[in-house]
Length: 213
Ligand code: AMP
Image 1 (tube, rainbow, N blue to C red):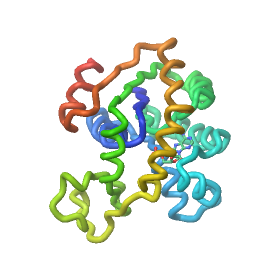
Image 2: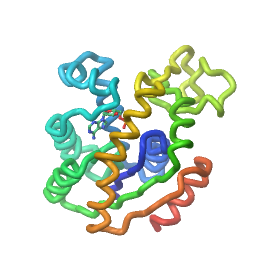
Image 3: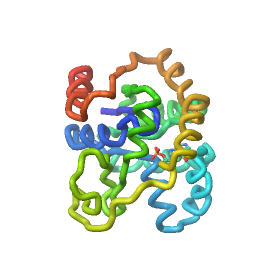
Image 4: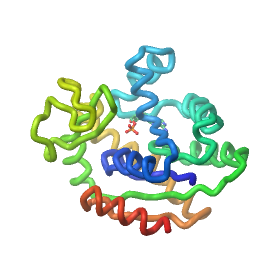
C-alpha cells in the first residue's frame, strides 16, 4: 500500500501515520523526522536545513527530492510506505509522481486530514516530542510531562522550536500558500480520502480504515 497523509501542521499526520504503519506493516516516512535527525546529528543536510526549519520555511525541493528518491527506492519501501510531510508543494508532487512511475506497483492513495486553524494552533502549542523515540504527545493528555509515555525516557519531552507561536503562524501561511494547492493537483488524479481530524485519535484512525476498505 502506498499512502500520502496530507494536511496542515499539527493536524495529526504523524500520529495517524505511525498507527497506520503498524497496522499495514509499511514504513512511516516523515520528511520532518528525517530532517530533524539530520539537524540533531549536524550532518551536511542538517546544517543546510536547520535555519529554514526553525523559521517555519521550506527546505529547498532539490534537497527533498534527493532524500525521497533514496528512500523510495530502498528495500524497506518495497511493500509500500506512508508519506508524511511530502509532497509539500505542487512541484514536489510532480517530482513524486515521476519517482512513483519508476516503481513496480504505483497506486498511491491520498488521505487528507482537516481541522480549523484554531484547533491547529492549540494542538501545536501543546505538542511535545520525545527526542529519544520521536513519540508525539499533547500536554493535555499526559500526567507527567517529563516522562515519555511511549518509551519511558525521563527528561526527553521537548517542544519543537518550530512550535513557538510566531513560527506556527509562519508555517500555517506557508501551508496555505504552497502546500494546500497540492490537494488540487491530486484531486485531478485520484479520489482524495478526506477525514475530519478534529475527533479523537481512535475515531480518526477508524474513519481512515473504513474509507481505505
Ligand atoms: P514537519 O515535521 O512535517 O512539520 O516538518 C518540519 C519542517 O521540516 C517543515 O516546517 C519544513 O521546514 C521541513 N520540511 C519537512 N518536509 C518538507 C518538505 N517536503 N519540503 C520542504 N521542507 C520540509
